[in-house]
Image (cartoon, rainbow, N blue to C red; front, side, top):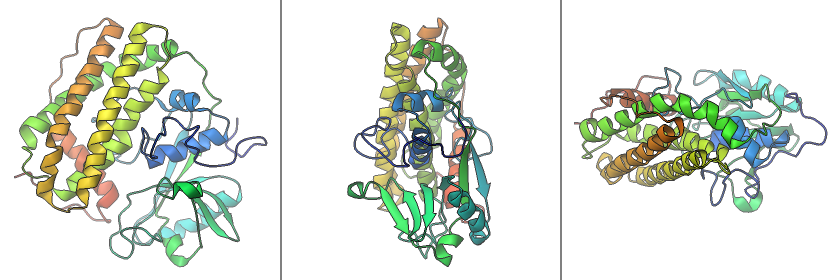
Length: 351
């Protein structure tokens, strides 16, 4: 199946009834980025199960390198990002328009300072949300947006203005879309589970150290807290959620145990992420103490998942150590990626 729009494929849309695990809000399991990728895959004939199989990868929750944007390589597709500096979005707009007129959807991560209706419009150059632009015509730019009203089908149409063009500092194109994968959960587990063992052990050690040694719970710098919700809802929850759904329905009880444990951990991650989103409105570093113990609860859920992975593999728990510094670097990176406004973050202390 090619990247170009094919005859007989579904129209682009967010369809909670058929999407993967979308019960109440778009953030059920997947963030705004992966909901956009999911919509592209479903346009190409994927069902919810195939989306899970096509986006599930071995777990790597903390340790990723210097790229702090969303993961871009999946079994089902590749996502290619095109980035411009703040103030240079208008230079990218002609290519965005060209892609849309050619029938190629574009994932936009707009600069909120210029994006119509954004909470930060006219104030901060924050890149904190993603939408799927799927058509450009005389009416304007047609978008799928998890934040748009459900009664309007999670759709928006925005007039094309200089400000909208300037907002297009970051966009991505979904490429190399593979045919839907119909393998059984047991076959998927053979690749996903062993490759997740050592990384997850290290991730748990990092979380434990961050909770017990780095962050006392007294205060959490606002930008790190914002980076934490991006990390939790944009990466941790989706990885666990996709693994759980990719392995769901297995006849092998060991595979089923991994699926259940992954979904339970995903639910804990969602609770932490949504709590952080709620606390942001107070704009007080001390209020995040309410989320401190949720870090430990999430680590406990990941420990349960690690146990299920070990039982599946017939392996001992891998030895791992952490001091919390890798997680702090990750949070700083996520905060810089979304809220850095084109300049390095100030020193962020937990004291």
